Image (tube, rainbow, N blue to C red):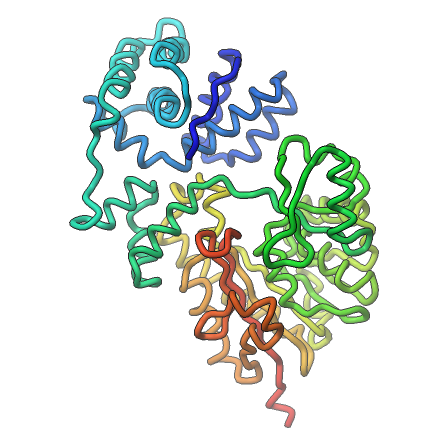
Length: 456
């Protein structure tokens, strides 16, 4: 990656970075939520906000590589340090590796980040001096002799995840490309709201507000915006002309084939990004029932629907699920998952995820798929999707469901629209998008049709 240019930022910027990293690691809090809270309360300039975001996400993305350099350039055993001291050293190491900061400036920052009277101040200074002096001579695991260790360290992924992907993808080069792509800053991709505009008109509206953009490669509704800062303060956003939505997410919503006057169920609606897109595809004609277990998310969905002009969305908790048995033309399940496909957006999650999490999620996904499949009417469609790269949560869940539910048959996604989905169709007929292949988030989807054999 290109080195970040150093501009004037106050010391409080680095103090904020340290506090955020401590909260992510020690308190298991999510960086996007913490950043939102910080910027609402704190008085930071635009360059300072950019520096905070860059450092927090950069350190989380490259933590394995950073820790390896610290351990091999100094005598520090970073795994034995408390999180605050470790994060001070990580901040300074990140400065040394990824910015054009001077050694004197980095050392000054190390001293300043140690609170007055901190007994570890001398240790921190000596460690940072060692990193500055030895960082370029640190040796990484040999790619040929120890390929898993090389990827884990150089591309900063836990070993169990790398081993899992090697077992599933079977090719080392593909796994290395995936891990490398996960550490890149993802593009800002938005989706035009079909109820109010199209991509050409939206592009013009954003251009007039000094937000240049280009069409997405695959989705006919997407734009990649070159400038991220204050995108939610634009007039175009205020008018509901667009929503931020990754291109992969747009594509799996298009897999539903939702049409005007249909009855569609969005089973795990969350904050409603896909529900809003469904409303646009249906031109506000027909009905969308958006199910969600969290009341706050349903409230947010209703607020967003108001801005988007989506009037055919009804929100519901899961208590009334049985009322819609056998009534839906399409049931869309974007299931809760491990999020292994969105590590580039949520790098903290790769460090907190465990093997047991995968097993528990797969069991829950099977329950959800079974529960919501009952809502599909004969001839209707069932679309199961996740934002993960994990066979247990994807192919295995669908195969087990199809074995136990003979009324449903899988529909290869390329059959739905060869031009749109052909490049995303696996050999087994599933949809898969990958960061290193398509420059989208990693999504999986399966499309199934209800044949209702039992009534024949």
